[in-house]
Image 1 (cartoon, rainbow, N blue to C red):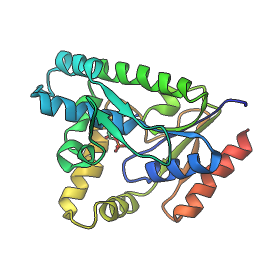
Image 2: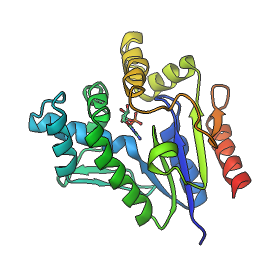
Image 3: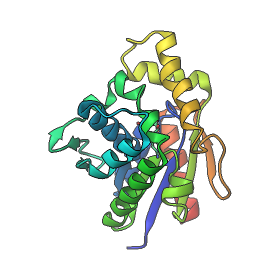
Image 4: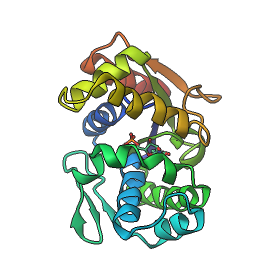
Length: 220
Ligand code: C5P
């Protein structure tokens, strides 16, 4: 069939992962969670005792890490060196360290290459989400969306996602502080030229999925 690459960027807590996964299901497309790859490299570094401030070592780790990532929207798994780390990469210790990997430009270059290969491997029918998909990983995607939400909505959603176990200060650290760090190397706060913004602050899950699908149908 015709290529259908749907690129979705947005800040943390915007709902991008769950929305993108569901959009992929309905489009019968593959799904790529690029954040999971940054998380997997972070866990790999932490377990190998690699200093996250050592750019050369982090870049080497990104190249060396054996990461397997499901691109089926119906089967979520991530493996590092053959071991299942699907849950481990969501731990707060990884969330609060991941920006160190994301701001290491050599590590980004390696992960961008791998992501572009996974998009090719999908037969160019995929919903890929992250921070730099519309601008760096797949700037020529058929559909490019920036999914945003107010700070209040993002903090609330992340809190619910983590089971209401986090304090307000912990949530702020995981959403606002992380976005500020990530923003030093990628711009996911403003839509690039040709990128459609969807503000989900006042939309529920189903309405947001529909808004994404509306953009897909309008642009293809
Ligand atoms: O989307 P998620 O919150 O799982 O992403 C984890 C981290 O991975 C982000 O905070 C960011 O540091 C990094 N990331 C990135 N570029 C992407 C996707 C994620 O820098 N395309």
